[in-house]
Image (cartoon, rainbow, N blue to C red; front, side, top):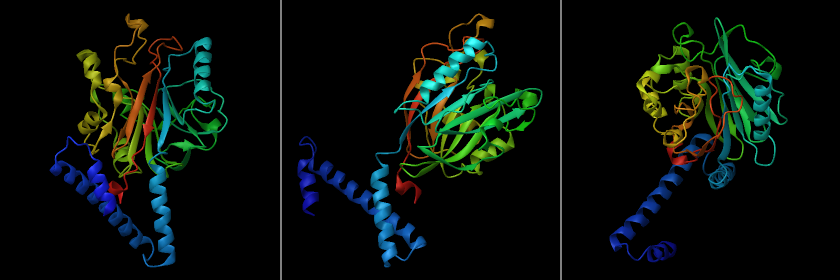
Length: 347
């Protein structure tokens, strides 16, 4: 009670008495809701009166306090496009990735989209990957920093474990692959890879999706919609590292700023929120369309977005220059992701 009175007195003097009292009530109500939620969770796990129950409560409270400051990590998207075929350009992309995965401030997740040449497996990284293949093979691979993440489960035909079995980066040219965002006959091959990851410091689990969406809100395959709606991603935060292909090119670059939330709505996804800073960025990412006479990026396609929960994507940065320098390359991006650790929302 004394602490609440002290807090009440220290609030800004410009606030009215009613405003200050309302703020204190909000703090008290939020605290009580949190405690009630924790006890409801423990009642299902262990008796609250047992010693084990007391220890569990102490551990859970400790995790909640610690996770609020340790739920942040860096991610990158690298899409050189399948037309990156010149050897010097491929080497420049390899060096770019090497800079991302070395040093004390290395990136936790690196999405390699339409990265169709070999890459040595970085030390300390595992990877997930998948392909969509009919006439041609399209790929999505994500490098996963083992110090920061555990791979809890794989979604669909996403593979992990043996790096040499991953499409292109491990030396394998895929001839089959069912991980297609859209019908490849209608929209061309557009692959995705997906898994449930656990961020070690915060103990938060989330669903990761990396790949390429179809243009003009093309229909998603039932398998992809199911992956987002029920298979692994349901009820979790979803981290997208994707070429969204938002909007339609013939309608102009402005339509490419459609948000991930809007894209999900078009496809009947019930995401609560999406943090999608790319649409506010002054810098478009697509593409190096030299064959069409557009060497500078015009479209805001490439996204790192976090949907569901109260997590945030911040510090979205677009690399200044193209790296491979071949046709249709996208500019590479980096971002900071802060997962939601709001226990009230999930208990």
